[in-house]
Image (cartoon, rainbow, N blue to C red; front, top):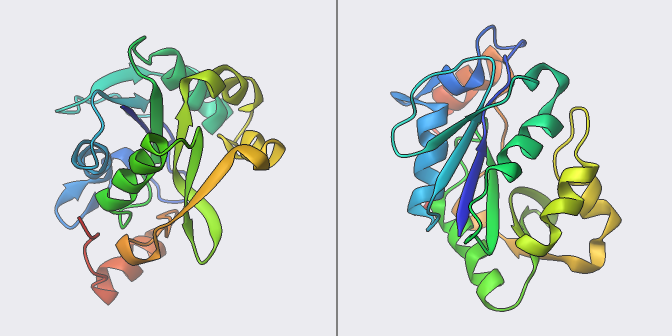
Length: 193
């Protein structure tokens, strides 16, 4: 099971690339790699763009088109998947409170027969998302502009297995300095493992 972390954006509302932002003493990109690895993914691929930095424990893929939006980063990451990967779990670097148990649950859903699985919170699909190899090309074809797998998920609801993850993390995004400060201030619990 491969893991794919999208971390290429410039973080324009944050004033710095999100991959480099520190949360609880750890860069968001490193937290994302740990999320996927601890959740059972190997290898872990990280797509970078605005900031190209070494990322221990991951294969880094550079997306020269990162400024066009998340779609190009998703496509770059999916192209880098090893042939042996039967599926990929896609996560976002700006969701530091998603826990590895969410990734394990998606992998469990795949083992039980799901070909597409999305972590759900409050009954709504969010990230991370698992995509079986046979759907990778279609996901990539629909990932344009600043959207990732959402167009695919909406066009193929019959394929999507929702996996409840409310008890193992929070999908809150860090988009602004205020978001980051709010998370740090409230001392939100660490993601469950």
